[in-house]
Length: 143
Image (cartoon, rainbow, N blue to C red):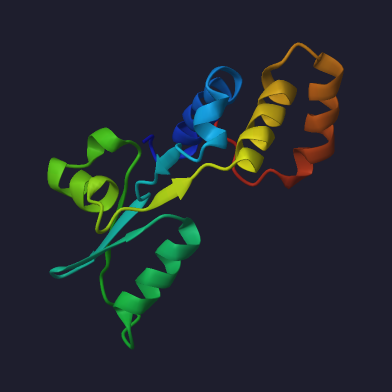
């Protein structure tokens, strides 16, 4: 379980790389899962829904507004798990009945390891080529 934002994705990459390199049987045996916390909580009155992406957030806002585009919707963005109260963390990320669990596959781990090698490995020319090739695709740069 890591944060739902970019920082959490970085931590997941490091964890998956470690597991792939040093505990590969856990992944190949199908024993590694990622608990996916939401990125947003959206509220209208007593109704509260959670979104995992910006697109899902926008869709839920439209749904909650219904026919009235001026309806006020409360939007809370979680920067980290520490911003959730224990009940929210249980409801969204830990309760087996409502949580979202992502099973890590060998393909996921291989891709993570490959990306880790490119972005953080010792082969500077590969890293530079990757950055040059993908620089124009960047829509969110978290520095």
